[in-house]
Each structure stands twice: as C-alpha cells, then as structure tokens.
Length: 374
Image (spheres, helix red, strand yellow):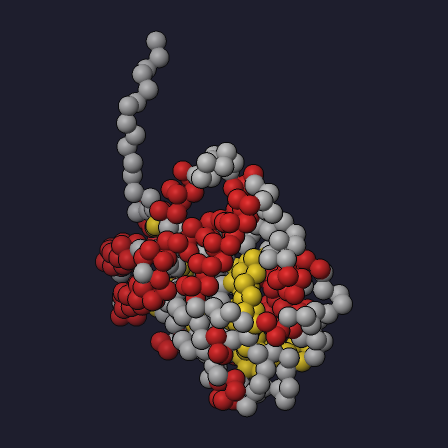
C-alpha cells in the first residue's frame, strides 16, 4: 500500500548565493519565469520555443530594450544591442569595430582589463596607458597619471574589476585630459547598480550573468557615430552596425536571456530604479566592509577609495582556517564565498539581487566564526 501524497509542501528559505557570476537572480523574477515556463501570456509557447522574429518574442525584446533605456537614461543617439559571447568576446569585438587598426589605450586595473588589452593586440596597436599591476591591483591609477596616446581610437576602462574588487567611483572626463577619443567601459559586474554619465562614454558593454540575468547574453550600448567602422575581418554577426540595423535579430540572439533580463529590468523598476539599487549597494557595502575592515581576524587588500560595492575580496589572516570557514558558511546557507583562484582568500559578490538580509547573515557568520576560532 502506497503512502498518500502530501497535501502541502514545506518551504525553506533559499540560501544566499554570493557567486561572482553566473550570479543570483531576484527570487521574484525566478518565480515569474517559472510560472510562464510552459505558456507565455497565453501564446501556447515557452519563450525558449519562440521564433526570434515572431511577434511574441519581438514584443519581449522591444520591452526589454525600452525598460533598460529608461533605467539607465540611455540617450536616443545610442543603440542598445543584444549580443552573445560575454565580456571576453567583446574584448575582440570592440577593437574589430572601433579601433580602425590604430592605437587603443588601455587602463589596466585588474585581471579583466589585462585580458582586454591582451586580446586587443590581435586587432590593433594595444597600448597600456596606466596600470596598477605593480601594486597588486589594490588601487586605481589616478586619471592625472595616465599616459594617453596622442590620437587613440578609443580608451578602454573596466569600471569594476570582478576578481580584484576594484571599482571606478567616477568615470574619467577624457576631454579634461586633453583626449577627444571615446571612452569604452566594461561595466559587466556593476551595471544597473549606479548611473552612467553618457556624456563621458562612447560605448558600454556588460555580460548579463553578474547583475542582469543568465549567462549567454551580452549587452552593448554604443553611440551612433561609432557604428560603421568595422575591420574587414570582423564577422558579420559581430558588426555593430549590422546588428543595430537588424534590431539585434541579424542572427538568433540568446532569446531566453533577453526575456529574463527584461524581467530583471522590470523588477528593478518596481524596487525604485537604479537610484534605489545604488542606495542599497552603498548600505550593503558599508555593512560588510565595516566588519571586515575593523576585525583583527580578517584582512582587506584593496585600498578604501578603490573598493568595489559589488565584489568584496577578503582574507582570513590565518588561512589555515579557510576550509573550515567555507564549510561553516555552506552549513548556514552562505554559498560561493571562495575567492578567485588567481587571488585566493574569499570573495562575496553582493549584486543587486542580494538583499541586505543576506549581507547581514554573512556579517553575523563572520563575527561568530572569528569568535570561535580567533
């Protein structure tokens, strides 16, 4: 005789996921996507089953773009492109579209911008105009120290370094530095956590998997006058002008990623927009850095003025406790706290989807672990 099926399902709180990417999504968004999985708005289809050129999906993509434009106050003179390949692919796609084979200046502030400069060498004359590598990527080179070229095609800056936890707090004004080249920013790991001054930016790109949605989608926001200069070797699917002319539908885009991104954009709007995301980011970062910076059991490497609000690397002063720290964290539902292999230690990524309660739970654990092992 089989036991009767349970009439109710007990629910337990979801763990807090501090992964650097692919990263946590708002639970509200996940539930909305789950409810629409088999049938989107009475269409009889899952979004994953739709033609990317059908009216149903086109409405999804158009709404996602419109919401993103509102959230970031993107001027009409910029195109929003939904692409593939992530930030690493953009390290090639940007110089293939913007370098014209000339000189490109790179500000190396961590692992990602170093990768950008290395990849660009295949397509242009990549030149490091400033670097913090000698100091271990723990502070940002001040714009006044940058050695910019006479006439670069563009200047590349990673405005938030996910691995080293270094963030640009204010975008540089290249014109004030005597440079009329466009600024290109890789803002993958802090997009939508703060505003963007478009008067200082020619192109911004972001992989979605950190602060927007699932892996597979890359967002490019590019000024109109920078289109139409792709190198002959640039694949047609990566030619910004061609992608823009076809409303990101030149080839099949990552349709489900665009759909989830649209849900996230709607969630951010309902929370109060980018201004509210920034307020929360400041509160979460101040709470976490306040404990880590003052506690003798832990150590921060990044200098205060350069610390990221999104990615917080830290170390146990006695690293013999690392394994126990991670095991105890998992038991408390605090996941993905191990630091990047190139840096070591720990890292807590506290993107928009991470609630203040999650950071408070981590802070409570930090204090408790130190009390028991210090």
